[in-house]
Every structure is written in structure tokens, then in C-alpha cells.
Image 1 (spheres, one colour):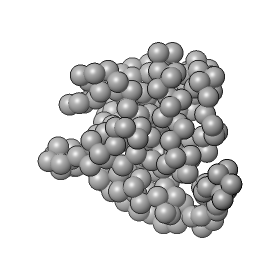
Image 2: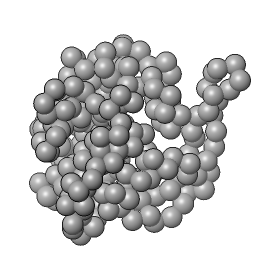
Image 3: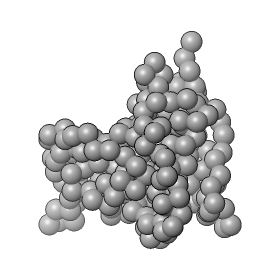
Image 4: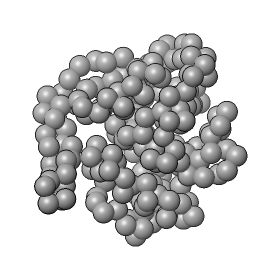
Length: 210
């Protein structure tokens, strides 16, 4: 029998992580058309509202119900504004491991949302879901995403050489693929000790999908 993630929301001091819904279509599409998102992710460019709706109504629910992963909308508690997305994927229910990725919208960066959302997701996955390992993969030049990994307590495990395809602007304004390395990070339950207190002393956000 396939294991699945529950359809839940997670609250932090400033954020609510909840399932994506159709009211998020316009905000999600705008977020995914950001230059940094285009550079460091495989999100199609330009990213349309039709693509956002397919993600929300088809891809995300299927990922959760089939046990592959779960996507959360990151929203501000006070304004309910969509400020990012956090995703667990490549889930292995036998090993109890999953891969973590995150995007913060360009207009919401600098507020510590990436670290706060990632930490809350890790605490929920280790606590409620009894997982034993979270993995992150960051492009070698994506220092912003790497700093988020460090802030939530991740340990660098090594480099996957030539394993990542990033994108760069060509002279004609189009995107071209650029091959680079992946840095592999891991997070175990014991790595979270004391991390929450450190983050509350000074959140710093970096908004790239790793």
C-alpha cells in the first residue's frame, strides 16, 4: 500500500504553509517568471497562468495522493499573501527520506521566509511523519540557496559533478542551458537542535529554488 502525506497546513510565527489553491494562480505565475527562478530551476519560461493552474489542480494533488511528495504555499499569517512555495519530492517511504526545495517571490525576499518555512517543514516531517533524512541539492553557483541550507542546520555531503542544468540569458534575451555541479546537503533530526532559536534571533531569506 502506497504511503501518502496528509492534506494539512503548518503554522509558524509569521507564516502559514498550506495546500496551493486556485486563488494562487496569478501570484504563482508571477513568482515563477522571476529571473532568479528561471536561472536556477527547470520551471518553463515564460510560466503561464495555465501552467500555474495545472500545477495547483493536477500536479500537486497527484504528487501528494500517490506518495511522491507534497507542495505547500508559503503565505504570510497577517496578510495571507502568497510569498513562496516549498516542496518535498523524491520521497522514499522505506528509507523515510525526501528532497526539499523552496522558492521565495522576489517581492518577499529579505524577510527570512525561506529559512522559516524550510525549518517548519523539516520539523513537521521529522516529528509528525517520523522521517529520518531530508536532502537538498543546490547548484554550485547558487550561494543564496546554499546559505538557507546552512541556516537550517544542513550538512554538506559532497558534490555531484556536472549533474545540474542551470540557465543563463543569451545575448538575444533568450535562455540558454548551462551545465554545473550540484552540492548535496542532508538534514537529520538531530541536526535541528538549537536551530530554531538561532533563526528567531535574526531571520535572513534567500529566494531561489535549490
